[in-house]
Amino acid sequence: MNKIIECVPNFSEGRDAEKVEEIASSFRNSKGVKLLDIQKDGDHNRSVITVVGEPGPLKEAVILAVGKAIQLIDMGIHKGQHPRMGAVDVIPFIPIRNVTMEDAVVLSKETAEMVWETYRLPVFLYEASASRPERKDLANIRKGQFEGMAEKVKIPEWKPDFGNGGIHPTAGVVAIGARMPLVAFNVNLDTDSLEIANVIAKKVRHIGGGLRYCKAMGVELKERKITQVSMNMTDYTQTPLYQALELVRIEAKRYGVNVMGSEIVGLVPMGAIVDSAAYYMGLENFSAEQVLEARIME
Image (cartoon, rainbow, N blue to C red; front, side, top):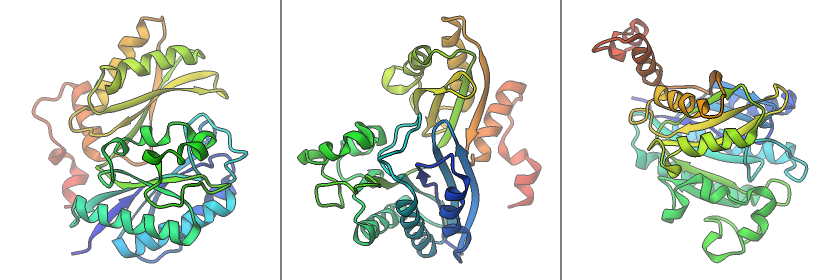
């Protein structure tokens, strides 16, 4: 049976649709790779592309997309609400079918080496591929962002896993690794106070004493004149989406702030939605196996 791996590269361009499409064409035109989704965000100035494929073709397509992004994106003039450290900010590989996490780790390291050798773009390995414990968490690597990365990589403990001690002048650096499926889940608030959004995010995320498998930060959506708590749910089976939403709602009430709605960026495992639907509908003993479409696709 075919080995299937998912890849969800994040590119630091979310406002110029033509540039995003040019990057996406690297996947759209590659045999053995299927482009599943493109999510552009103007406030974040970031695009999240979801693709799946067999390891070999997927690696080749990712390399092409990285080259296109380096050609089109200049981090020296990039502005956006989302933290970033490179034209291609992060490239995670996720095992889906007939592959192990170790297979995904091997693929991530092979890709990282090729990215450096081909484009001289420095690479940090993260999550399951990390070479050091402090590099498992992407936030630790990204701290300082593009503007501070040239100095950061000079520190011995923050030398990239692939690189020569500097950064790419216009594309910065990139993090590449293997991880379990992640759900990018954002909750919008009816306030324009970024301070309040950040305080709520600190209460919700694990590092602040909140939910174990939740990373969160406050983000300002200037065009809509609101803010959001932007979250990465790193294991939805242990920390369901509804728990994150309800905790945000509870903390927001402290400040007289209401939840306006929520959004999922990119694709989401069916189990994550089923779990939350069962909670809000009060379904007893319900499972994803009862979803008609899931049984048809077996």
